[in-house]
Structure formats: C-alpha cells, structure tokens
Length: 97
Image 1: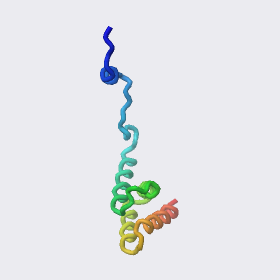
Image 2 (image 1 turned 60 degrees about the vertical axis):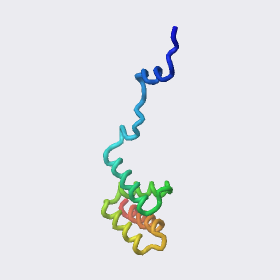
Image 3 (image 1 turned 90 degrees about the horizontal axis):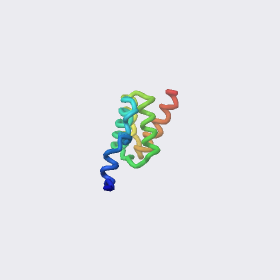
Image 4 (image 1 turned 90 degrees about the vertical axis):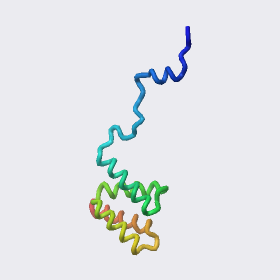
C-alpha cells in the first residue's frame, strides 16, 4: 500500500477553509479599512495600531469629508500633526455620538 504525500493529502482535503479575510465582511467595512490605512500612511502613523483603530472609527462614524478636513487642519496648524489629528478626531467622534 502506497502512502500518499502530504501535498496530495492537503490538496485533496475538501474541508479546506477559505483564508480570505474578507469573506464575510461588508463592503462598508472594507472601504473604512482602506481609507483608514491610507490616512495612516499619509500622516506617517502606519505602525501605530491604536491610531489606526481611531482612524477606522472616525471613517465609520464621521463623513469622509469631515475626516479629510480635520487631516488638512492638523497638517497646517499642528506641531505634531499625527497627535493633533488624533485629538481632533476624538473630539469629533465624541460630538457625533
């Protein structure tokens, strides 16, 4: 009796799970995620997970125009734009809730 290789066993497994992260995620959530990622790159905060979560919440709660106008304000007036943007977004989210 021949022993099948691991590749045959794995590829023949019909119960393979789909590794696509976005299988059950709505289009809005994907859109929010992409916009938050873009904002994090623009502000220079790609590695800060807490800021990224704040950006996601901001895009989910506030209008996209409002978030980008706050980004522009933080770029113009803030000594530390990333910190100032986080402060501005936090205040706007509190007001919207």
